[in-house]
Length: 430
Image 1 (tube, one colour):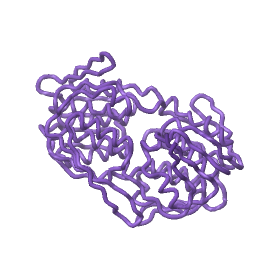
Image 2 (cartoon, rainbow, N blue to C red):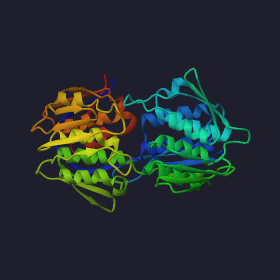
Image 3 (cartoon, rainbow, N blue to C red):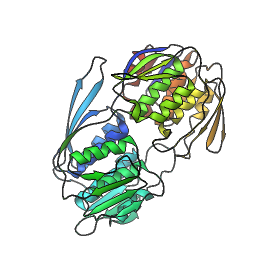
Image 4 (cartoon, helix red, strand yellow):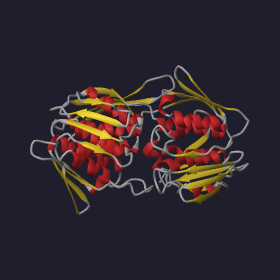
C-alpha cells in the first residue's frame, strides 16, 4: 500500500496547475446516461473516483474513449473523454461497485428518467457521516416515481409515460440530491421546480452542460431551479470547471509553508468565502491573468474562527485543511462543522504531530503551537488525508502519511505538484 513521505520546512515557490473539479466531473459523466448521442467532457481529472465511475457507467452500456494532452507550459495534464450510451444495457447498479463510491448512487436519476426504472444499491463512500438518501428518493417521488427498498437496493419505477414535472422543497441543502433531481427532471413531462436547491458551482456546471445538451433550465446557482422537461437530449461538448477544493487546499498549503505560488487555471469566484478567511489568516491573494497568486511572508498565521456552510459559505471540504493551518496560528481558533456529524477524524492524527485541539460537540478548539514535529499518521478520508500533508509541510523532520488511497480519490498528482514548488514530498510503495 502506498504512503506519502514529507520532509517539512521548505517554502513553496512556483506554479501549480489546478485540475478539473472531481465534484463536477462525476455528475457530468453520469449525465451521459441521459442521451444516446456522444457527450464530450474536457479537463477531466485522472483520479481513482473517476476511474471507478467509468467502470460503473460501462456496466450500464456507456462506451468511452480517452484523449490526453499536455496543454500548457506548466504541464497540466487534462483529459478529454467522449461518452456514448446508445442504449442502456443494464438498469441495475450493483453493490460491488456502488459501495465503493457514494456518488455512483446518482445514476438512479438518469436511469429512471431514460428507462423508467432503476435498481441501485444503497451507497458507500467515506465514513464522515450517515448521509442518508431520503432526500434523493423524496425528490424522485415528487416526479411520480414509485420507490421500494429491498435487500439493500432501491427499486425505482416511473409511471407509464415517464416521470412528470413536480415541485420539491429540500428540507436541507443537498448537492448530490440536487444533481439527481436536476438530471431526472430534464426528461420529465412538464415543469419541475426545485426549491432550497444547492447553489454550488458544480451544480451550475452541470446545468450548463445539460442546457448545451438541449435541456431547459433556469435558476441554477440560486435556491430555486426551474426545469422544463424535453423529450430527449442531444450530445454536447463541455469543459469541466476548475476544482475549487484543490484551489483552496493548495492556497492553504502555501499559507502554511510560506512562499509565493500561482495557482494556474482557477478563479476567485469559485471560493470567495474561503479566500476571504485565508486573507484574515495572513495570506496575500491576488487575481492574475492565469489564476490566483498566493503569498505568505514571515509574519505568521493569525487565528480565525470558521463555521462550515453550504455554498457560498465556507466549504466543509476545506475544513480539515484549514484546521491543519490553524495548528500553527498565533492564538486560538474555533472550527464548527455543520454539514457532516463525523468529520473530525483528522483531529487525533494532527495531535500526533503536536497539535493542540479539543472537541466540544461539533466545534473544535485549536490552540496554535510554535512547532509541529513529524510522525507517522493515518489518513481517514479524502480531505482529512490532505490536511495531514499540509501539516507535514510545516512539521520538523519526517511525516509519513499512510493509507493515501484516499488522496488518490480526489487529488491529481499531488506529490508532483508540490515537489515542483520546492516541497520534499515523495510516494513510497511497499
